[in-house]
Each structure stands twice: as structure tokens, then as C-alpha cells.
Amino acid sequence: MKAKQLHPTLVMKFGGTSVGSAEAILRCSEIIRTALQDWPRTVVVVSALSGVTNQLLEGARCAVQGDIERSFHLAEEIRKRHFDVAPTLIPDKESLEQLSGRTSGLISEFCNLCSAINILGESTHGYRHVSDYDMELGDNAWTDGSMHTVFTRENVCVDLFGRAVH
Image 1: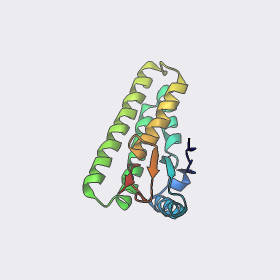
Image 2: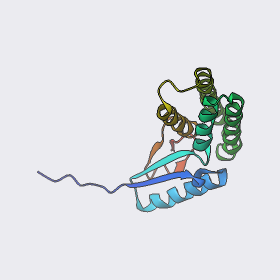
Image 3: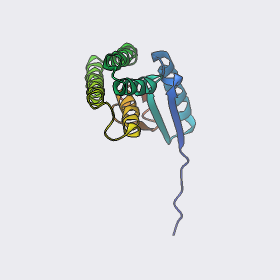
Image 4: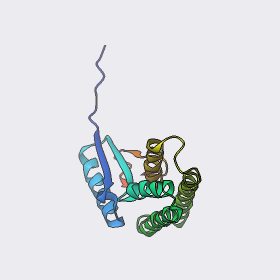
């Protein structure tokens, strides 16, 4: 029996300041394109925009402390950041509208969560659960539900939805 040949896989993770602006994200795209020349099997992991996870956690903390207006203000800042970055990266109007709708839905979900926390005065599942949810929400707002994007030589571009572009 012939042994199955394993192909090495490059895993690249981009988060924090490397996804902090449209320009930084475009640099990530170039890094990925270059890597694909030598690594046909590449996995790219993209997390929330720089600072978004901290803003989500602060928003939840403010809700617990009774400052729901601060929670809503932080949510609006997150929405604005995503809406400011997106047009530079997504020239296609239809895709941009889809992203805007998805982001708005996730921000609304976050505001609803903060409202519930504010009414209860705590998270019914404990702060750890809320923190996990907030981090997932931050990543989802950026990658449309999928942090992992697998690239092949034919899929060399990164789009704002976290999917490979053919």
C-alpha cells in the first residue's frame, strides 16, 4: 500500500493592527498573494478589526454597570469603523450592501444583548459567556461568520466577507 503524501500547509493569522485599517488589510492581501506563490495550501485566519473586541467587552461591562448609553455609543463607533473601511476594500456595490446589512444586524444584536444585560444587571450565563459572545460577534462582523478562509493558487484575493475570491 502506498503511503499517502502529506502536503505542508501554511497557516497565517491576521488580527489587531494588521487588520486595523483598509490599508493594513490591503497589505495583508499582498502578504497572502506572495505566500501563495510558495504555499499552494494556505489557511488564512482573520479576526476582528483592531480594537473592536475591546470595545465589545467594554460595552458589555458598561451595560452591567448601568451605562447603557455608553454601550450604544461603542456599538455605533464599531459600526462606523466597519462602514469607513469597507468601501475601500469592496468596490462592488451589491457586496458592500450585503456587508453593511450583515454588520448592522450584528451590531443590533449586540445592542439587544447589552439592553438585556442592563435590565438584569448581570449576565445570566456569567461574564465569561458574554465575553465569548462579544469576541465571536467582533470576528463575525468582519468575516461574515467564518474566521477561516482556505486559499489555493486560484483564490488569491481576500475579501471583506472572509471568503476566497475566484
